Image (tube, rainbow, N blue to C red; front, side, top):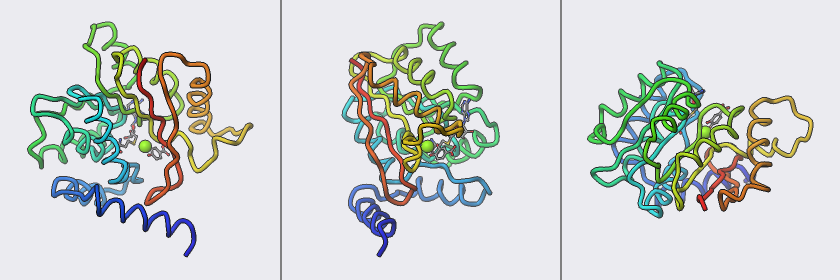
Length: 222
Ligand code: SAH
Ligand code: DHB
Ligand code: MG
């Protein structure tokens, strides 16, 4: 058995024990698979990890960058109390459309707000409009401006808020020192910034499993 099969099987083992998809999540995944989109949704086990963090910080208000078809949004919404809210930002109308369809199929619709547009512009407006702080922010939109997203996320946080960023290891390509891959360069810029950033206490969790080798940046705001 090669490493990847082993990692994937162990991921499925963890999923069976802790992250079984309910009807909402299964239905969403089924609908997403019917569109010919590269599936950029997080895995079920990663969805469960987001729920653990949401509960750990008592999240009532969550911000997500990069809705795609709403699979991760559903995991987040399910970790919220009845009066909680997840605001999710998506640039592509087509993706937001599929996501809205997925939310309509559940009883979580009232907890989810989809805003379409460029994440950076929406976040700038939020800062200007004195949006109350978010308890948790999940960054998973386009990779080149990840550092800008992270800095804005800190501005939209409070002490103890949790910031999670997907895809910051990219199968180890972040080790390449002269890459011209804009996605790798984007996450390298953010990862390097952590070295001297005193705003947060952060680490990167390397992830293997049903998705390709990658990593999640985990930060708590100081
Ligand atoms: N969080 C999702 C996956 C997100 S994939 C999940 O796990 O289910 C990344 C998404 O970011 C894509 O849908 C893409 O259209 C969106 N995106 C790309 N650039 C963006 C931008 N500037 N602002 C907001 N969303 C953007
Ligand atoms: C890409 C984006 C994602 O959010 C992801 O989880 C995987 C890949 C991408 O743009 O390549
Ligand atoms: Mg991602």
